[in-house]
View 1 (cartoon, rainbow, N blue to C red):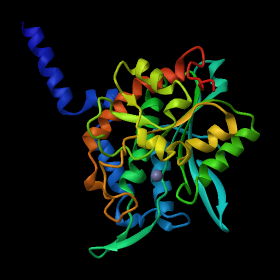
View 2 (tube, helix red, strand yellow):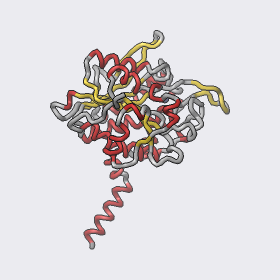
View 3 (tube, rainbow, N blue to C red):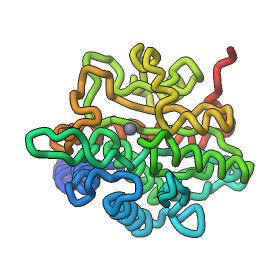
View 4 (cartoon, rainbow, N blue to C red):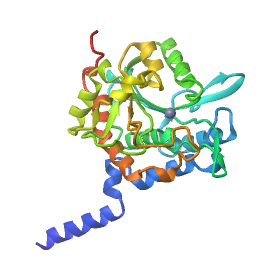
Length: 313
Ligand SMILES: [Zn+2]
């Protein structure tokens, strides 16, 4: 009895300090800190070529460095040019721990750039881009931290924060081309975009773009043991599959590359609006979603066969 009581107390204490939640993946506190920094006015809406984007990149590089996420190239930056201006993707790398599977690559990505300024509203002109896409960036950063700690990936993984998405998916187009030239063996790419608030009235937590393109949703649900990923008819109607950084990889490699999102056209009023601010996001929901993705993504990294496949047309 005493022993059990001690156990319960110890458990309660650990929970209190957030250690148990941390072991699982992330916490609402950690997600909140990342989103709050990336959306602070100091970063001026993270426009391509801006000082604010540079600060965001340095912040992410420092987290990668502190947590022993390696640079994939000579540095963390995959630099390219947009309208005569230099910009970059930030690319972290975790080599796979299985000799054979380490030759295969999985990409976990999100764009970290935004549009800089927006239409003035209540004296505010900075479009801070919280849901679009500090939210997805926080998922990629916390997943990178988690897997750098557990070292539980048999396949090699790139954790990518894409630049110039808002300019027309330019960062992902660039990296897809670079990897194609290197003849990378890309298994699959999972992208995170606008995951800051829960879906309205759905049994699943998020949806995936290009639902019908592959068995990815089915597999992620099977791997997670949860009703995690569903179908959003509006995503199909608006062809969201082609509107984020997953698409250039799909085009280049013809493998399943899809975006996980929770933006359903009814649950968030501030798309490309200056009120897309951190305070309008639900960090508890985000941490919960990211943590539910952890076991699913871990399986993606580790199954012996490439189980996620494009559907035959
Ligand atoms: Zn976006």
